[in-house]
Image (cartoon, rainbow, N blue to C red; front, side, top):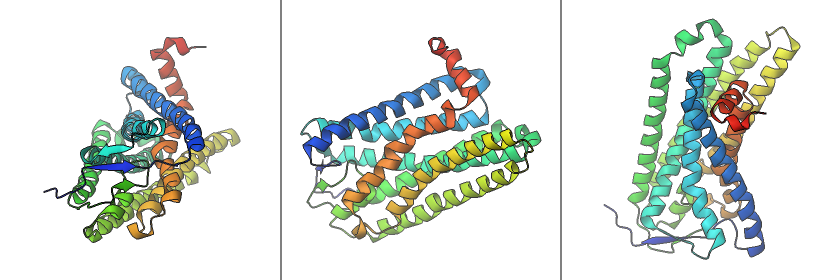
Length: 307
């Protein structure tokens, strides 16, 4: 049962300085459009191109959908608060935003690990790839990802719904995230912090470790490639993937590993922008648009993009 006294929250946003708000509005609008349109392009290309109906592109499709949901649940509202003086968000809308963000956070972390495993099988066991990564395995991995993401989101959102918010109702952030909401609660938050810590250890640190292990085996296999050009291309791909993964995991681990009392709003708002907008913007570029098969698939669907 929800005992909340607060019926709406006030979101302060990234900054209170008008001159900075105009600049940030343009920057974030541009990045959101790149992230949204880029991921929509990937979704359409993969769905309508039969040659891309493989496990690797199924995972890319899932990442693109997750990124669309993540950015759309947060950025439009943030841009609205920058453009107008309407900074309020209803309690229900805040909880919905929290649910979809937490879901996308969990899904993306597990998907990064799944994609790393897929790359590991493709490079280290190329002759057995189609046997190992068959349709059943692909469906099983995607199903496990969704179950973990939904469970993670329901647990954290449910625990937040149990809290009482007596005021103040001002969220010093640009969206409804767990740490700033915990700092506003006037009821005990110990169980929330414990579950956040558990999720950070298992999902963030656990998935990041498994991802690094997969890429460790991949790099070892790349070193066995005889041609210098082949090594260069493989290392270029792996390094770009690891950079994006690190940009995602590092701020997430940093944000959620600490108790709410140590949360630094000004600094952590900037850090949150990395996993809510920067990574979803980079994902299409790093994982898809540099891929020749994806480029061909996009051009087949969107013939006007052909040179």
